[in-house]
Image (cartoon, rainbow, N blue to C red; front, side):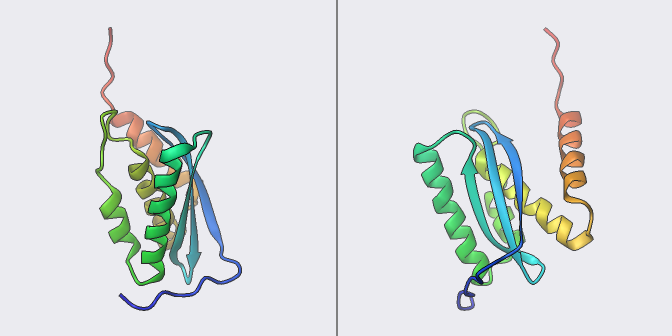
Length: 131
């Protein structure tokens, strides 16, 4: 990896609200030179160990991005991690937020539309059970 890039005083970014098994999370992805540069994760109303773990993960991902880690590799590393509540874990939702920002930066498509399209696709892929 290359030396860590210093953080500028300001950086443009996107904050995306996601829902996980642990509740709402807010993922902020800042950018530099058209690429994800750092990540911040905040739980909606929760605190404690989950928030501390999310903060640690965000710091590690940010350090990696600022040191040459490809954002796609960060997404790949966090995707597919599940817990006893199923696949919609915080890490999967953070990966999803980074992936959505990457797609927006690469294509120029509206980020809100990308989020809506993903949620629509996800809702349609779930099995609907009738009692």
